Length: 482
Image 1: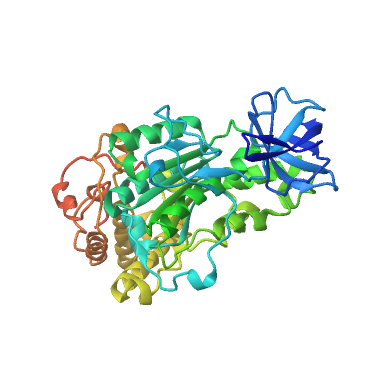
Image 2: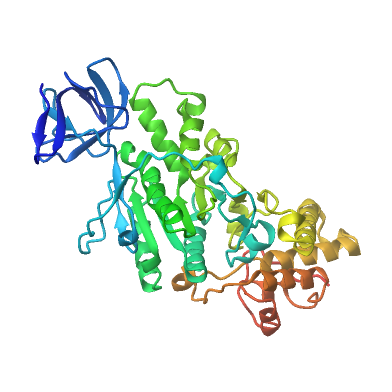
């Protein structure tokens, strides 16, 4: 089949479909075989998009559909202009919501014409990357004190279903866009459409949408689309980092769904699965995405990624490979969530590479170590308390338990993201106030106050206002020990 001209200057290479197996399409081209990652179009209106993933022989390619394939049949015409998947970039994308093709899905006026970029970009070279480490403040006490995040780094939120990953991500968007005046990019991979709609409405009501871009590849879309939406979102974020020299906060919910989409694509392409059914190319595919997130001389992309952990098993290959790319890991605990301690972070399993004296300072480092030690001692004493009761503990151990329980409650925080559900106004807490509060609790300054006075407060001085107030606390609250 001979290549034809379209619109006088766009050269199309035409072929025909030789097989359709669900989302996997084989196509034959008699002339000029399309390259890997080239985008093919089929259907009456060219509405079906297929990305080439392998070249089977000198005339046949195999691709994965990025859209539903209803209506495709053998012998149908298929065409390509040789381009790969492209998305719009620039200031015109701010405040808008997109799908993986860069089409707006917010029912507003059409996007202005402008530059488009290929979603398959190379990571920044090593000589362009920044080597100094800076702390990225979130306004959330538990994270800033014990698990400081890195500017231009990658932080993972690990947890099973229903422990608060999306709520914590939403809160970080609210705090970051409000504080830093940078650009926020939210990428929803394989999550619920309802969550995307709620997030859009919440950001619009808070007046934060003008500095945000949202891109969604929802769970009802084919695996090919879910597999590419992360690359498309990164391409948009890279424009603001490299061309506008701005700091970008990239929120990914959920990186496990990216791995899962890759597993589905791998299975459809006929590759032999590896451990637990994951694709053999898992590490390479995840690295191709993660290595593009970096702090460069021009600006930084700081990424916070929710990582669903199947069956709460942190040894699952998806969780293990995600761990290797992260500078901070925030593990969410179902046990703490059941006690009403939000954010439900397991402080003893969570860690950050930034928590060193050279980066966060001696005072902060020593305080964080003291807090971890106190919480670890309390964890060790829990078995004795459950079997024998508090009375069997020594005076020193009772003081440790008192401090730990007050610290646990002080490190909870009312979120702006949950105001409409809890009726409690959200609070943004500075690192100085958070450290001062922890220091005063460790010094037993508030040992006569009831534990629940520290629950869901911002500044430590609010505990004094709550003295004697019958405030609802965590489910597992126990009487104060003096």
